[in-house]
Length: 445
Image 1 (cartoon, rainbow, N blue to C red):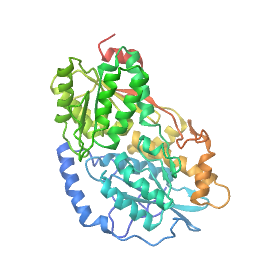
Image 2: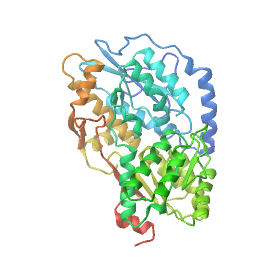
Image 3: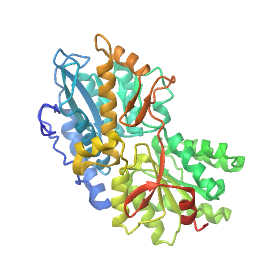
């Protein structure tokens, strides 16, 4: 087996250092991560983001090679998400071929910042890639999807459950994962079954398209559950607020924070203001953020005596979220949705990923591995000449079992899996959550 850093697996831009350690480089205190992110982003603007592309066929495929690209955070505040996705993709493609062609992976760092993501995506398009795969984030996808669509480059297996990747079926977009709306629907169902009401639920989200996608999904779930028009109107007020950044705190049972910052107090204070204004106490706080900030938010609330049960979307990144929570001394009252099997699963695809990834095995790297293997199968199933058009046609008729995970694109959408597992944090990691366990967390058993 070849090391993952060899040219047989990755193809890097000339002069570009792409040796970001995949395992634990991100495990620094939040303040350290934020300062390092700011410095690195400044350096990117001056250097790496201005590199010239390589010359390749525009469609990124030759007789002997196929080139795939990925734009994700490999440095900065949320570098763990990108590094783990990268590890999963590399493991999935290692030693594999597509119709006798060697697979080359190009990775570009975007710091989880839309302007940098846009530059990096255009670089990949100019360099020539067959498709992009495993890109991380909703705000970055929001600015890069139009570029990819204009160039006819498929966007495959992006690490986001936002609706903007599911509402434009005319674009070449291929999703593996369930949507945030699906994650939140299942979460709200179990919360209400445990005895909560829509008024007991509050929200803490990132103040951008990712956070608003989560908020919209939550509003839809609460609407189906019979929430009052007055409560739903407060969510609309937040969703419809504009600005740069939009002033979305203190408008309802919602707190927000700015992406790539450690700031949590304004969002927390917004929830406390809602409690004081209405007399309705938050009991279950739904979050839509990234691991470092959400963990810091939980710590901030616990230090102030809050007993809220806090739930998180899968994008948060279960492994690093758990690590940061444990660093803060938080070991209970944590709920999280997963869109891949739990890590203790005995499904063949999980066993395979565990063996391939070793110490890098986790929720995000498992998703990267699944996305890579799903893409390999579809690419190799294409009959005749392999082009972007023939790939997308093959996607539309693909239905198969991927080591125990059902992949189905034949139901007239661009999403292969509907898997959602509601889990909760235990000393042994995340385990599937039952209603009785949630009742106990809420003190209602």
